Image (tube, rainbow over all chains, first blue to last red; front, side):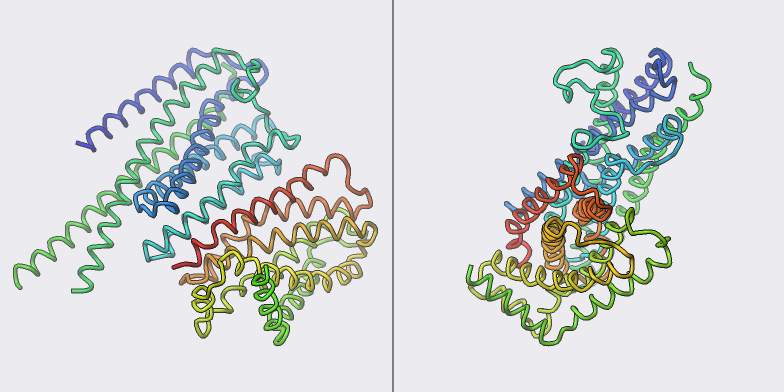
Length: 229
Length: 52
Length: 222
């Protein structure tokens, strides 16, 4: 039953993404200064928001684990962090392609980019760390603490465009500029729609990963049981 | 549409879709592998119990 | 507070008796300084890269001291004894952090003059600023290093995981320290633009210290 709901959700988000792609590519006009390449924004910005939301929820789940010692919270934390890392890669990748055209290089050591890369390194370290610890309780405890520390880098990355003068474009979305319209309303509307689609897709893969984490634990428990026979 | 940038726009979209698709595929692969392992272990346990 | 000083004094004494990690760290910092002289063009003054080089040296050499902070207690189950003692976890952490801070400060005091001579850098132009930045950044490094030393102390692959986790975590502190030190070494002093880094450094110290103190009990009590 659960898998059927998940399949339906996956199908819906997939169709929604394709529908968005059609509108982004064929119905929205080029941006005056950048031409066609600006359309990368429709994946880049929502991808980052999705990634950071996942990290935020992972930090919440980690904190919940530390307070309640509920292993389900730890399962959520892994699944969320892994999905967040995939979306970080998506954000970095799409950003590089955009930078190649607009700045002429794939990468600059701009504060925003540097912090984003640090985020990736830290969360990759978190995922590696989990693999090296076998005892579930110890793993959950240590990973939860690392997750809370790691989230600081997410906050800095998010605020870096306000704290430093960066080459990376500043805030454009109306919820960050305090209502000031810096982007065409039609484009912003589409951006939010693709955000919704990507987040729905992220939720699907997160639940898939969550199911696997549970299965993995069941497997580990079975292995331990057979080993002790 | 701007011809010059179009190619790189395509690369950007390809990166996004490819990443998500690749992750989804690894998840599916891992799922079936896990299922198989759980099944083998359970069968082993049953056999052992039947013998004992 | 008395407990904190007891722990700090215990760690300092046991380190200064053997001088194992402090000698290794000081020697290692010299090695890195020499290695960097091959990489960089040092015909002029160490203006541009001076700050970066200096903090890389401190980070690599400091890691030698910090990594051993909790691992040292593993022999003879000292860590279990410390955790089981009525000492609160935060006092244990703060004491160890203070001892590490003192050890790192010693290494830095050795490395700074050598750096100044080898790379022709006038690091004494703003003594107050240099001292302040070194103190703030070293405290940040110490807190993170001590915390992650505690985190990984019981891990199978400790030596592997520690650098992978610690260095990215240290980047914010190191980046701020590098920027500020470079500004000082170039003779420009702290400009209005650099204040964001000073604030960042202070903010980091506060956030990391409070987070560590809040979470250390979770780590130690097994």
